[in-house]
Length: 375
Image (cartoon, rainbow, N blue to C red; front, side, top):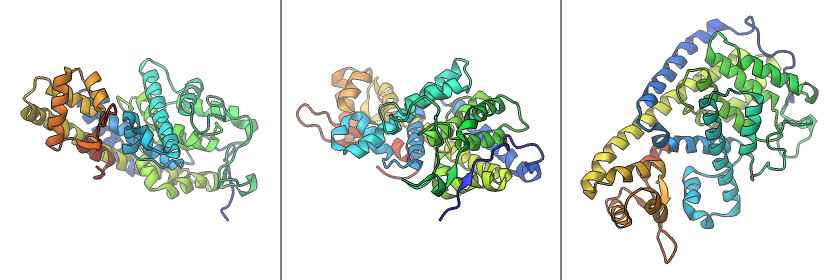
């Protein structure tokens, strides 16, 4: 039976004497350098919101997967494209959670662009969007919990829990301390972020959705602190791959005071994910530039540029949506789709029949976002 670990009351934030900076320094430089290289690349990408949008969807899938959903990025995009009737109800529920994550992240990103910061009010707004109409909608979306919660196997009691978050009577003071620490300037923003992420998960302020919101805070804080120019940095791939170590590293802080070990684990993740995110972003940019030339060559159309822009904004789509939103005359749009399918640029997900539109996928982009060939 797993030992029950209880929240580290009175130990946040860790004092300077608690963190072993001699052990942290070898990771701090490489982590900051890796993020700077990644930010330099995405800053130079034209229309990055469109070109890198599949990475946002992939992050939403992985962050939700850590919480128990079982859906792929392709399934999410297929449902969004209109194939929801071919997906069973449990899958549709998972898809809705992923789409909510993407909506909530977009809302928070826009809030930061307009000058807002990571306040408790903003976190409640984002949480409300995260649980809107999905599992957890009966757990007070947008409101902090009003009773003690705990983490463990389904149906376990408090005494059988793996982790017990901050006691209910200390929740508000814990949240205030979290915001106060987020607003300070620490020796290194990435170490500060590591501590902030762990503390949010340890406080576990909501009845549901804490894991997803806590991971969402990572790119948002990096933008707020000026480390990144846009919230396009994602860590759920690293955290999902090393889920057991992720959970145990957080538990060890409350159990053993292992703040330095946790920060090293987090910084290693920043280095790893910055490298992977940079590789994906560069591959997407290369594909975009290649497609601009190739689609022009095979379609001989003045509208080829609009077609390429659409493919990158919606890598799985229906014929109807392409005709309506690509900005291309209908006859030309249908001709371009036929050519792209015949040339193997597009893959047919669902054939059209009667009034039911065909659905196509753009494998080149989807495989980059997934990090493997899935289409």
